[in-house]
Image (cartoon, rainbow over all chains, first blue to last red; front, side, top):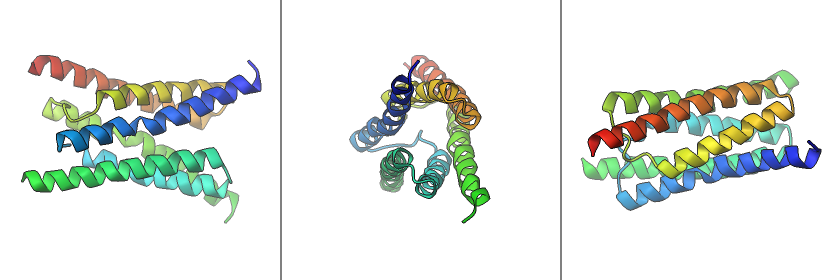
Length: 90
Length: 90
């Protein structure tokens, strides 16, 4: 397998694991509830993605940096939506 | 910042973004429902993590390989639990 094919898996993986959170955000905004989504998971994941951003910046890796900034923003919106709707549903 | 500190952020990030899915799995098994968890997100994320496993294997990166295998297993269990409980709740 040549370099191009290996890189393809890397970019394909990065796009999928980043874009994956868009349907969750859309679902949460549509249904106006995210009770079943774990708050601990969201907080741990956002902190982890934040660390990936620092790591990507330190090793000067644009793919790690870009993918994680988008993942960070999407999950932050999911977290805000969850907190907003759980407050309004109480 | 020296190499050790940079690597620390990488490992810290990998541990957090991997372990983050454990609380979601525990919550789903406890509440026996995951209606609010997006099915599309789970499928896209599992496919993406699968691609990271192939990428990690191809570039011989143990941290990428190990972290993504654990993430893959945890999310597969979340997906199975979601499908199982949604069937039983119908």
